[in-house]
Every structure is written in C-alpha cells, then in structure tokens.
Amino acid sequence: MRIHDFARTLVLIPARMASTRLPGKPLADICGLPMIVQVALRAREADVGRIIVAVDDQRVYDAVAAAGFEAVMTRGDHQSGSDRIHEALLKADTADMIDTIINVQGDLPTIEPETIRASLRPLATPESDIATLAVEITEEDEKTNPNVVKIVGAPLSETRLKALYFTRATAPYGDGPLYHHIGLYAYRRKALERFVALPPSVLEQREKLEQLRALEAGMRIDAEIVTSIPLGVDTPADLERARQILARR
Image (cartoon, rainbow, N blue to C red; front, side, top):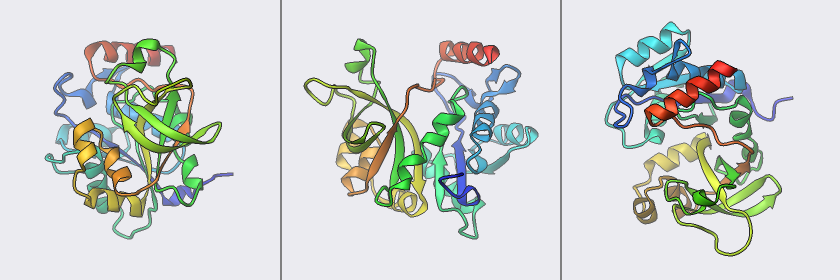
C-alpha cells in the first residue's frame, strides 16, 4: 500500500550543463547511458510518481527524450535547483494536479530507489512542510569537514529528526551521533511555492546552505534517517567510481 498518491507526486530532476569541475556532466557516459538518464532510471525504479527532467540545454533535452523520459526546458539563469524545479513544475502541471514534489539531484546516478522512497516518509506528518534525508556520520574526518553538511535535529523517533539547523561546522557539541545531511528534498507544493518566493536569508548566505532560508522563515523540515549516502558525481574520480558501481549492478 502506498503512503502517498502516485498520481499527485512528481519527481523532478534538475540538470545543469555548466559544471565547472566536470564540464557537460549530465551527458557523461556511465555504462553506455548519459548520467542524467541513469538518474531518471533510478527514479523510475523508486516507483513514486511521474518523472520529469528539468534541463537548460537542448543536448540534454534530446538525450532524455531519446531514452523515453519527459524533459522540460528551463531558463539558464536560475540561482538554485529549487528555482529550476519550480519553473518546471509550473510548465508541466498547468492543471495543478501535483501536490508533492521530490527533487532528486541530477548527479546521483547510483542512488538507491529506496533512498528516494524514504524521502517521502516525513510528509506523513501533516505539520512537516519539507522532507529530506540524513545519515549518521561514521568517519571521524567527516565530522570536521566543512563540505559535509551537518543536520542538527531533535529526535522524533529512531529514524526521524525535526531539523533545527544545518551547518558546515561540527555540531551539535558533546557526546552523541552527528548526522550528514543528504540534499534530496520532498516538498508539499505550497511549501515549494512559498520557499522560492522568499528572498535569500542571512544564515543561508553565511553558511551557503539554501535550506536555512526555509527554517529562518519558520517552515518545518523533517529528515528521515537512512543508512547509505548516495554518491554525488562532481569530479572525474567520482564519475569513474559511479561507472564501477553500476557495472557491478
């Protein structure tokens, strides 16, 4: 039995060609398919709703369409992935049929379908505006690495946190687990619309973390605790690792 309405759920995958560390990233070949198509396949395996790739380049649009997936062309000047998926939502759902949007980053070709499904669970709580994911940090060096974003949360259960803050610092202080934030989001439609209408916030700009804008505005973010961190492909070494992982599958 589904915990959500498949027909009213949209998986949006933003794809940006202008990557500085890995030029042309969405079209990078992984086991014979462009990376963006591999991400769309993982979303299809998750089986949670309609899938659309939000693109800003005709070559990516063509590659997605050739693989049998829906694509929507969006502007090239968006400041964030949430702005891009909001534009794609408005273009793809003119009848306002969609009420839940999952934002799956376009550089997660090896993400487990169950991880995508897990992002929906916190929205079973009516007070939750936005849902996301966390995983307990086990590597000591990650606890102090500013590139590993930490979620500071109040435990709601063994598998869920209510987000109080996100930071690049080592937090919270003292004994106990630290959690790595995984930047995959599920939004209620009204929450996404409210979020993209907000101006950048003080703490967002200071930490360079967009999700702080929602918390500063009083929105509630709950995080499901999962057991694995999806590989984000940002460098040629990441790309080679993703190829090895999918070749084994």
